[in-house]
Length: 425
Ligand SMILES: *Cc1c(COP(=O)(O)O)cnc(C)c1O
Image 1 (cartoon, rainbow, N blue to C red):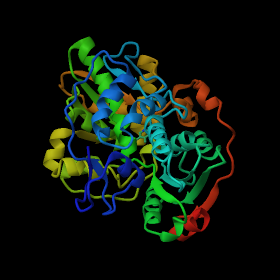
Image 2 (tube, rainbow, N blue to C red; image 1 turned 90 degrees about the vertical axis):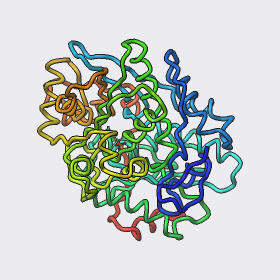
Image 3 (cartoon, rainbow, N blue to C red; image 1 turned 180 degrees about the vertical axis):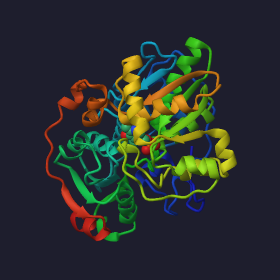
Image 4 (cartoon, protein in one colour; image 1 turned 135 degrees about the vertical axis):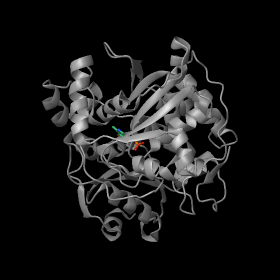
């Protein structure tokens, strides 16, 4: 399998190369040349599903023989699919990994692939990652203390929750956290710009662990495949997913899984007040804008990079409209959804998942099939928001409790010089 650039002028590459580069040389994002039809195995475990689903993407790749090991290492924590009491929908809980958000799947897969792919290389690798909150912690945790690799995490100062900030800054060793005076979009812009600056390379190879990296998106398809097959087997219907969305990586993975033949029906994207994607679907005009700050901070993205992958697959707004629906839930909607899910179903949702709950009520309409809300993070990452709304303490999962204490980040202005001065090799 080869991966092509969404901008069409870079030459096609293997998975290993696409993952090592992050961004294609023509500035585009890598996407599979074709999406293989898969024989989804309804009775399989999540790692078995992952192995079957991902094998065609690794055919002929340097890592082909290592895929079973990579899958075993990355998918070593559970997902849960269950209906809360009194609900006619399921919640797919993706937050049982080391940093309690779904980003652990992609980050752990990428780290496992990099450490095998680079085993014979003499050059070390510098991984850059911009984060609106959860990606950075997941990537830092996955790469911490791995040999021959260091990680620079850039996050917007004051726009991540205290629990998230701890997960970004607690590592030390080969992980450096940068607190950037700017927004997530500024951080993302800095990472993209750094790739064009020769000063930062030194003797290292540079890569990115953002969801522009294909190595993070492919593993995210697996739990959509696994859960939709289970629903098909148990209930005989397709699964409709509500996906709390920001940079649209999760949405891309779900759409790819459906294109591969997984029994997925409708896909509804739940955005917060950053409404670039819902507005595009309504109006047909793609108008990126500065991100605005919301309670669901990991979705505060005004210029979602993976839209380029979606528009590569569905070039017109009309085509996109047939594939997904999208809505925007403001902070009031997030708050009332958090309260209601708790009062009606005893479900304790993080603000992102609460946007999904609100979106389900707004958008479910007459669609047949079983609805599934994708729970993207554990509520314990946002206690200062969730606890006052439900009037109860949120229990802390053991993985989060075990993290080292926060440390001081490197504070920089949102410009390339400031970043390169600190981060150069
Ligand atoms: C990253 C994230 C999202 C948004 O996912 P995208 O792939 O960026 O659309 C939603 N919720 C949480 C908790 C996240 O960390």
